[in-house]
Amino acid sequence: MSAKRVKTSAEERIFMFSSESVNEGHPDKLADQVACETCTKDNMVMVFGEITTAAKLDYDKIVKKIGFDSFVDDLSSVILATLKSIKLKNGKDATSIYNRGECNLHINPSGKFIIGGPQGDAGLTGRKIIIDTYGGWGAHGGGAFSGKDPTKVDRSAAYACRWMAKSVVKSGLAKRACVQLSYAIGVAKPLSLFVETYGTEQGELTAAAITDLVKLYFDCRPGALARDLALRQPKYNVTAAYCHFGREPYAEGDLKFFSWEDAKDLSKYAGMKAADIATEVEGKKAEILTKWVD
Image 1 (cartoon, helix red, strand yellow):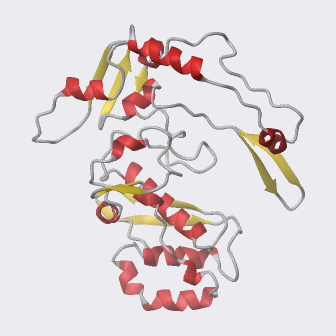
Image 2 (tube, rainbow, N blue to C red; image 1 turned 180 degrees about the vertical axis):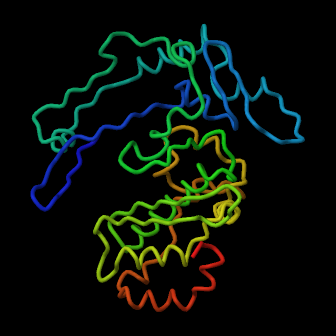
Image 3 (cartoon, helix red, strand yellow; image 1 turned 30 degrees about the vertical axis):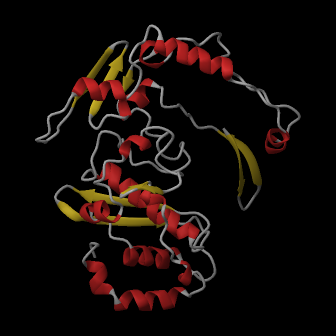
């Protein structure tokens, strides 16, 4: 939960905006760690989906890697030890953020919470889609990420939208951006692109000019996204909890993690006029049409 400050033409409002969050021990998040559809409850894990592979998989081994081996001893002791290790700390920042003398912190207000994980609740792949993205503050296409490879634009195009929006804001073209794409199965090029900057475009830029720059610098065909963001690498386990966005990109050997957070530098356009950008884009129209529907 965080305080938001929004200024309108009539007034400035400070209000509370809340977002759900769970950790990797939540049964839905356990299910999100398997690369297909998964549900779990107590000592049962069900794995199902459409997968084409020549590999011989040890399903039991994979299932055990996603969480707890034993629900009777290990799970309860881990949760109990974690609860006992929590220390409450009072800080001045909280009172200044909420502009009040005290902050009420509720921890298990209904009583003890000892039994957790799949023993305490059922888990299913794709039930925490808002936690995975923007906590309800940003737009969501409706499809889950987990259980899908990069050929599914539910995942790859959502990463692309994050990549483009972050590049626009970090480069100083606008203070806020939301990017939307649409696709049709069997058509590689996106059918539409919408860039909303909420009137925060900087200098003499316009939303239309920023949209043109996005078309010029990004290729959002699924195959191109898989290539440019290295989405075919086996690296999705770390995205299964604690959000797919807002994480620092990093590399381990040849693996690139959270590559969509590595914004492109478009800052050279921050001080340009929209007309100058339109001229540059028009000169590269043929290149743009290889990636986007006219």
